[in-house]
Image (tube, rainbow, N blue to C red; front, top):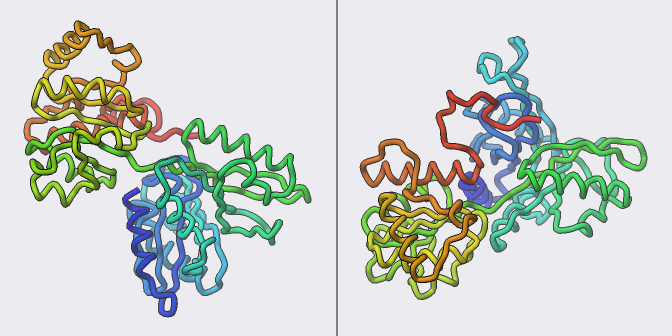
Length: 373
């Protein structure tokens, strides 16, 4: 999400009278690759780019091809195959052993239907998962649609542009399957006239939202790291107790009395880190009423167990389901000592939980790092 924000910011500062631009999007990955589907790079005709589609090894070639697409005002689909021992193939020698398809789409700056403008509209809306359909393979046109066009899926009616109930039902079913898995990938459909259209179905969830309940000095390194990653950070504390440095790195500061006004969802993590037993005990039941998928409690296990016991004695039972959301002590076991290392431990665990991973060393993993078809 941080990369997408940077792309949009750069796009907003373009002068259409002086600069041409294109967006490069990874739409297919087979095998191993540094970046996954949905990775993007904004390319300008002066050789400047923002974002990335690889670890830096393909960007130079993509820049050249994007400038060619701009000159022709036509999108193109480029395949980088690092599995073949071909000296003329860009990417040979990387050792990635994968195939990557990149769609290069020239942009009409200011056109509300260009891909970056559509992404901007998604970012401007309230937190939700967006579904985008990009035509990456189509000969000529179909119902006014061409290769490179991006559509927002907002329900069955948004598929009416395809003009055929059977085709629309197939696309709808595929969207549901991809959405349930949270996976973005291409899919080929047969049009009523017999031609094939390949769509990149992209699942774009909102940024991770971290709610930090506390104002002590260890909130600052955690908030700084959140900003560096590109997540959203909200601090719940008395504004008068907040250090000035913290105000500059978080998105929002909310007084405790207004906690209920904070929007939470399954992409939200909340950390109880007031360093005050009574405060954390008071906040835990409130936090459990939210939709946050992850709840962390700073401090040793005996402290959290004492909070659970006292709440139980007061008639506030924590269900098994809620216990699964609570991570106490918070963070991964990496031997963290300093506030900065503890922040790293906490954010690593949140990322692992949201990715449904164990947080174990990758060298111990017996299957590919990223799920494959």
